[in-house]
Image (cartoon, rainbow, N blue to C red; front, side, top):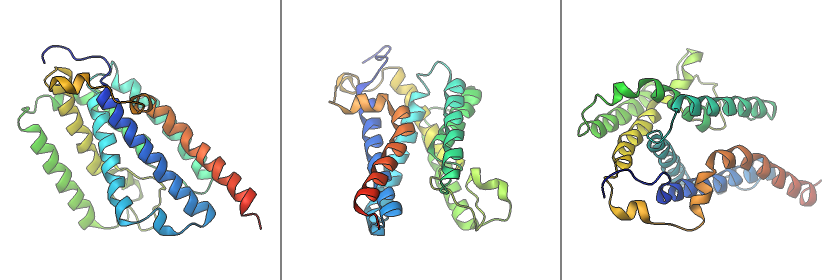
Length: 238
């Protein structure tokens, strides 16, 4: 297939939708443990520990892909950052603060990429994925080996103090390189260089969820919190 691909690629929306569904399930398990005292293994277990990073990484990758289709990544990023600030304020008063969650991170990446896209495009296409993956692994190892730090302002970059806590946490390092890897793939996708089926397949249901990922992210946790709170009042009231 050559030329410009469709404005909406159903397969990308479907994969994003699947990531959103898994995120909602993951947060529901967290609420059940945190609010109803369900067994900890329901939320934290080897399967979810792995899946969490797989579907979160996929979501970040797809956000990088989408940056190639955006009219203004800076405006899109500022919208995310504004929503993220609201989430921080609300969760702070709920005593379960999110200081640098997925929306904070994606907002940063969109603005950052929007301002520096020309710089990243200077990297040879054939070398770019290997450079991004190498930096991803190197920074992840660097942060792990560094351990806790004393500087309190480094947590957006992945370096935490011993007392730092964020209910959702996606630091700039190493995740920014997953986003950049998505921007690399997004260029090929936008140029129509993927197989024809990639652009023509039309999965059911999931694409509509993927197209509303931002809204779902904003409203799902208040809805889940309300439902679990209702169950707590009706069935677990002392």
